[in-house]
Image (tube, rainbow over all chains, first blue to last red; front, top):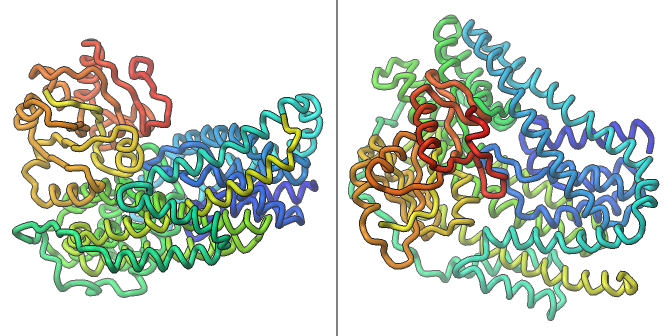
Length: 481
Length: 159
């Protein structure tokens, strides 16, 4: 492997963690399916890259990072595991097994980053206190992303570049027995990944669909793509036939704050969109233990304060300092909170006396928990596992079919960015009552149920496929004991 | 006395870690939020109820009602997770003869009056003293965001 190749591969690890991919790096390059494909492209063998990446991804199907806790690091496992498999000639199963400890190592980088990022909060405070909104980027993503580069790119480069050179020697040293064990462990890991994912979706009325998916693959020999469309159709049919749940009705719908009028009064559509874009892009660019996403909110407020208080430095400072307080939610479903905060800032600037800085803070912090719960369930708990299971299955089914990662990237990016945009707009234009109405209408639970049904079917199909692969695996390793 | 599976301090109360991780490991039927302020806030009660996963009932009660409620005999299959925002609430439960042997510390966000203390935990003097008092009373307190994470004993952090 050349230095340039290793440098490019290390950049994938950086990008998976960084903020630059429209804020969806965590959903794309961070996943071994995608990372493996990209590493393969760089090393001139995208098919093997996809195959190895998909295999490693199997054990991270149920990966959820909630509220700043990181269970392993699929990105490092995907990037380094795949490059060792291709450049070091490591068998796929052995690469999967070596990827596990790498994933744990990634956790150390994560804690380090979350800790050091706190220092940039101090800088943000200084800049915000002067009302220099246009300089905030330095401490929100300029410096933190440089730090991230140093903390992620450098170790990945060392592992990929030197690992590839020495892995063969290491493998010769540890010998065939240990490799056999690694291979067996690697072969079992996907079952764990699938089981963890099932924990989120396999419940109640969706259970039967898991077996349906398994049957269709095993006995009817459908391929994964037709399986995907079929499960979508079956889910829709089921949801249409299903009896409506009783909707929880509160006797009164009193409004806490009068939300009508006043949208797009001082702000124009372009400014609101810019604020959303900043949130989408930078919500996690300086994720830290002290304020969590406070820095992201700060960046989202930059276009807003510039528009509301173009000539009032003090007002800008006051607003920015208030908006950068502790905040943590699921950033996409929870984008409505930022939209709502923007509309409250607009009303405050119009002179509404009932809205103080404290009101805004308390509304934000009361919504952030519940929406994180719902949001994590929707985006990380159901949408991602379904789409990535599809992607992984397509990839494995075709022995490294690159359509797997490509279909996954397009579908997940559309879904996540779409959710974020719609949610932000809802929060800004319709306000807190609309958010609450949706929460209580049972629509969210319907979406989760529908997605769980589809998820069960796809996972059933995946297990069906996996059993097939496992037979081949045992046969081809006839003397594996 | 009700069956309590988990007592957790976390000022975001119900959120991603609780819903995607804790309730899977502790399959409770009820989540009891003890907070004097929230108990009187109908809007927030609605939000938290709407945010709960299917099959879990959310109760939001003030301290006095909570104490009486916990002392009631358990219903069949009833398992409860207690969520509070600050350690003082739990201390008052123990002072009212509710035995609590283990507390999980999940998150206490930074505020003006709080100093950062460990990762995402910030405390003010009063809260720190309260945690120390409970440790001295042989209540085990661990810092743990999600069940998969290794719990850290607060005794080793607070010194």
